[in-house]
Image 1 (tube, rainbow, N blue to C red):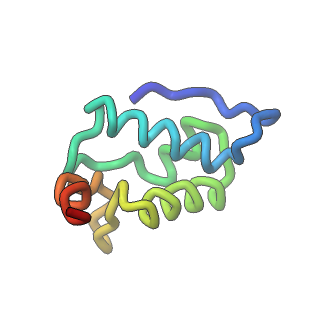
Image 2 (cartoon, helix red, strand yellow):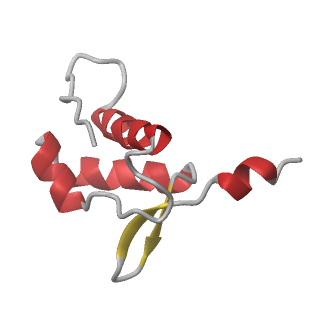
Length: 88
């Protein structure tokens, strides 16, 4: 997964920048449905962000349907293929 450094002067909040990197990795196929998403600890270390920022990024991805979290297992890329056809 390509990591874009956090830009403190960007209009997007840091959590949005992190989430954007993960979304781009999903869209490009670097992270496929069912793949484990980097843990909060990994995001903190990789991006140099606070724990709350990492949590907010993952929560945003979950709310938008990009990932799903399984208790005591981790966070994984959601299968969005059915979501795309569900509106028809």
